[in-house]
Length: 247
Image (cartoon, rainbow, N blue to C red; front, side):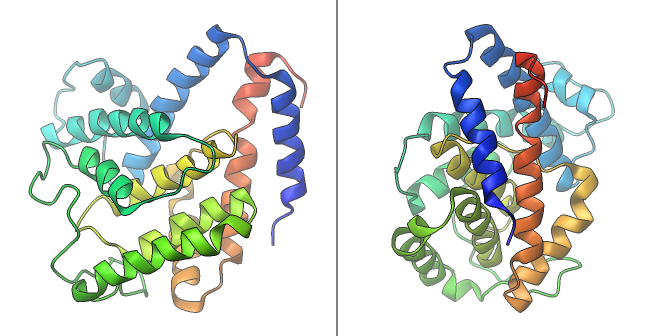
């Protein structure tokens, strides 16, 4: 189990500077939205670079890139805004909220499946884990929400956020967009407890997939928890930089 004390101390330190100056908040937010959108989409195979993502978010078409890739960038930003508006301390997760986030991810890309649980079986390329049969998705999601209500509150916020991500993606309730949705849900949980949202860098994609597979096939959450704790710790760095604080 990662040492959550380190993360608690970092959060206490950041809390001591709150409320942060509005110009710092605005600057950090713009940077975060860009990096989060770029990396989350890149993990799923979107070929827009960081700079191209920035241009796409400014409403300019990038030559040689598909309309879908542009929509993925714009939609992801809208989903971040939506999740941020949902952040209320101790506000429970619901299936409606999950479907609403997913609907934004696939808007104008695959409207027929946006916010709708899959009716077909899926295989995750390269993974040992096989998601549950489509017939069981509804009951699996109900079980997931029950776990969230009954057991998740007793976990450390970072562990709860990681488990929400891993267990949601294990069910793979949608035909597409599960990864992006799971990372948004994880950050929703972190933000509810006052932690900065995290960006899972595309460079860690292999480690990320392997850690998820270990959690899904062996019930070994350690590698995944360690990876998430690492990116949570990294999530504080932009704040120290903006505040001019020595780490």
